[in-house]
View 1: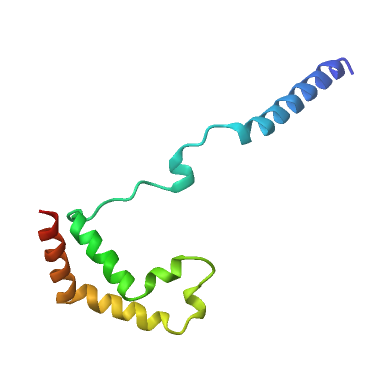
View 2: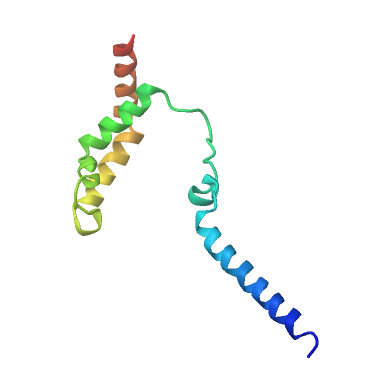
Length: 108
């Protein structure tokens, strides 16, 4: 029993250390990478302003901009697939290229 006082002191120190660690953890600084993940990697050439504007205009023409407003969910809307197909077709076709060229000409 001659180690009993030391054992009690060691137990008390261990408990205090555990408690201080538990309270300090929520206040610790966490890097953005932990919260948001790694920074996205750009593949290929960056888009021009005209390309971004043309893409957004085609998105709006297809009616897809309504899905990011309010409570409207694409999961419950049967017309979503048709609108998405319209957007994708426009984006792949000549409408996108023509729109980009028109926007580039307007910017000059």
